[in-house]
Image 1: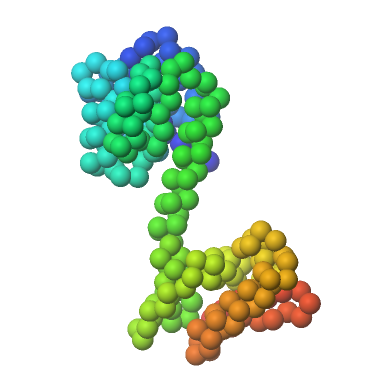
Image 2: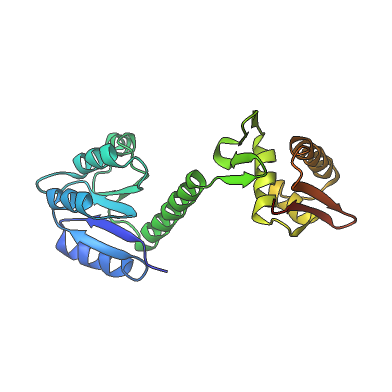
Length: 229
């Protein structure tokens, strides 16, 4: 798997060397020493996350972030700064930054935050890109929507999560306990009754779909069966 690409803009030569050296153990790092060059590089290449110092020559971190957000609303941005004023932190976050670390910062903390924001960003990408076909329905998990030529059905968040779990395990038996712990975090009596209600609702939705059914596996769990039409 290729490493995620980080745009790192920092004019302090020593700090930049130490930080980049550590980050490169986990990511592909492209370093720029001034703001204008960093922003131009962002426009020319593809990155997964930006780490920006605020006090930079030619174009400061706030200005870079403002321009980046005009072009990309999703890419994570982390500010690094010697500025400790609350007003500066608030300004950075209002510009769309995901976090603001004050120098001197911990490399371990920076790496952890980068990993968290990259994971979150990847999940968001996967979530918005994925849609599924179930019989005559198109299922959009992020919108909790089931749509076909006749109707549009809005599921609850839990119903949508249940259906997605079934789809990700199509034609595979899912144990009742696995479903309950995945959706509720436990397998107590009340969660079990809720699951039965959700199963009934999904069966009702798909009752006209001759190639789609949710089978009950006695004393084990359930299975979503989708047959080739």
